[in-house]
Amino acid sequence: MKKTILILAVFYSVNSIAQQEAPKLTEQWQPEPPVVTPGKTNADAPSDAIVLFDGLNLNAWEAAADQKPAKWKTDDKVMTILKGAGAIKTKQKFGDCQLHIEWRSPAEVKGEGQGRGNSGIFLMGIYELQVLDSYKNRTYSNGQAGSIYKQLPPLVNASRKPGEWQAYDVIFTAPRFNKDSSLKTQARITVFHNGVLVQNDMAIWGASQYIGIATNKMHPEKESIILQDHGDAVSFRNIWIREL
Ligand code: MG
Image 1 (cartoon, helix red, strand yellow):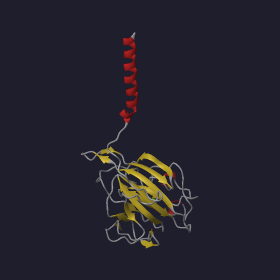
Image 2 (cartoon, protein in one colour):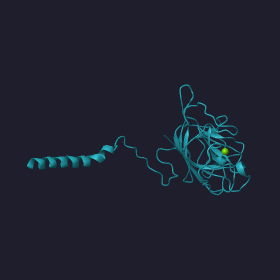
Image 3 (tube, helix red, strand yellow):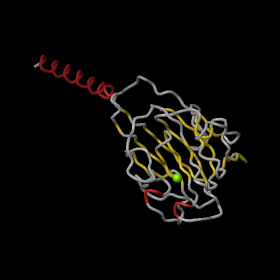
Image 4 (cartoon, protein in one colour):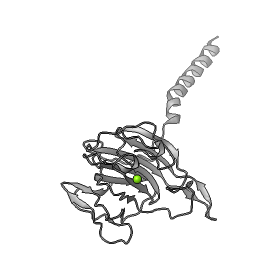
C-alpha cells in the first residue's frame, strides 16, 4: 500500500513538473528582434528607415530618363510634379521593402477618369501602384487609386478629397527568378491606403502595361522606385522606406 502511494506521488510530481515545463517548449527566444524606435505617429519615419524625401531637397532622386538632377518643384516640405519634367527615380535601388509615401492630388479639380490627379509609384520601376484622384471620379476599377494598374483593383476606395493628403503604406516582396531566367515566384504586395487595407498580400501579374497583359521578365534583385509624371500636378511628401 505504502509503495503504491509513493509511486503515485512520484508520478504526480513528475507530471506536474512536465505541465509547468510544457509552455516553455513552444517559446522561441533567439534571435531577439532588434529594437526599432517608432515615430511619434505611424507616418513618421522609424529609426531604421531610409528617408527618400524629408521635404528639404530631391537629393535621393534623379530624372528617370537620363539620370540628370530631378526637376520637380520642392516647396514648403512638399515636392510637386512639374508637367513635362518627366518621371523621377530613386538613386538607390530596392527589392523587398516597406514603403511609406504621402501624396495629394490638386485641390482644383480638372479632367476626369484617368485624367484627374494621375501619377503612380512604380516599385522596381515597373510595378505601378496607381495614384489617382478617385474621390467621386469613376474609372476602371483596376485603374483607380490603390490599384495595381490594369491588374488588381483595390478592395475598397479609401480616397480622401482632392487637395487632402493621402498615404500609402506598402509591403512589397520582389519576384524571384530561376537561373534560366524563368519566373520562380511572382512579386507580392500589401497596401494600406489612408490606413485602410486595399491590397492583401496579392500576387502581381507582371510589369505594368498600358496595353496588353502584364508579363514577367527577369530583372535584377533591386531596382529604383519611379514616380510617374502623368501631366498632373500631384504632390508628394514624407517618403521613407525600410529594406526587408
Ligand atoms: Mg498612373
